[in-house]
Amino acid sequence: MPQEAARSEHAAVGAKGQHTERHPVEDALAVCAITIGAAALVLGAIPATHFFGAIAAVAGLPLALYSQMVSATTNERWLNVIAMVASFIGGAFALRHGGFSL
Image (cartoon, rainbow, N blue to C red):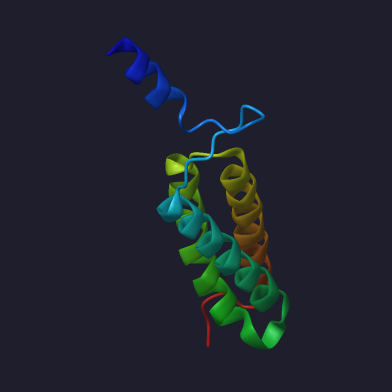
């Protein structure tokens, strides 16, 4: 029995000692956060689309923060930090161009 437990613990470790477990929910959250963050950055930088940039920033920043809280890998954490920064800067651009005013 102890040998089976030891094998199951090491079953998720690859050849170079890297973990090979998949995290589909965390990966999807990180990708959504980076996508919305990039949209906030682009839309916030364009004066005519400042309203949509502000909405994307308001949605993207909390999503990136939550995604960072539940992230499981370093790659996810990198994407989340980039998404947070992009959402924040996009929101600042959007507020500079008029924010939530239509």
